[in-house]
Length: 165
Image 1 (spheres, one colour):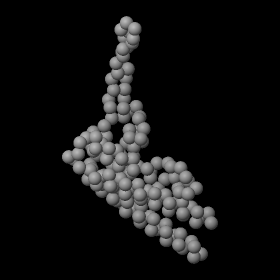
Image 2 (tube, helix red, strand yellow):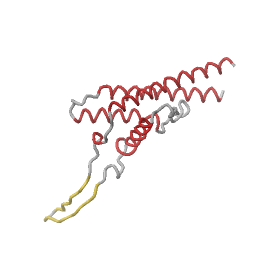
Image 3 (cartoon, rainbow, N blue to C red):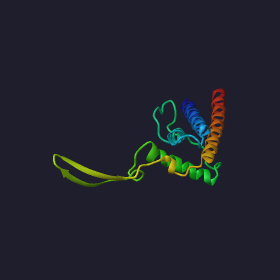
Image 4 (cartoon, rainbow, N blue to C red):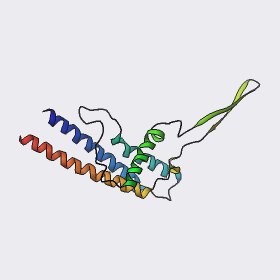
């Protein structure tokens, strides 16, 4: 029974992950370099969030395992690097605001009569400045979608074999 529950939890996780990869793929497929920057930024941000979800801890472990486990050997070296870049962007700048990605510094403070004036120097983060190849990101989403579908098939076979025992 434990093995079947674990396999079901893995299957559920991979199924959810497959949906996330499809969502990321759709955002990247909708990309058009002619769109205004806010639209391109939104599509890229949404794709980064959707693509990264399967690789970050999530809740509901009794129904689905917390992270997807997909084979990286089928990825090319550039795809492995892009994967690392995308997940790091999600963790450091898109899903959170790490200081290293969005540095800021109070510069000075002065009194001007009844109020204090201060200045800040900061470097805003813009995902469009991250040199992400849209074509390569789309390919990576496609590879991960195929991997997740293959994994679901494999887990389904194991679940069916378990039932016959």
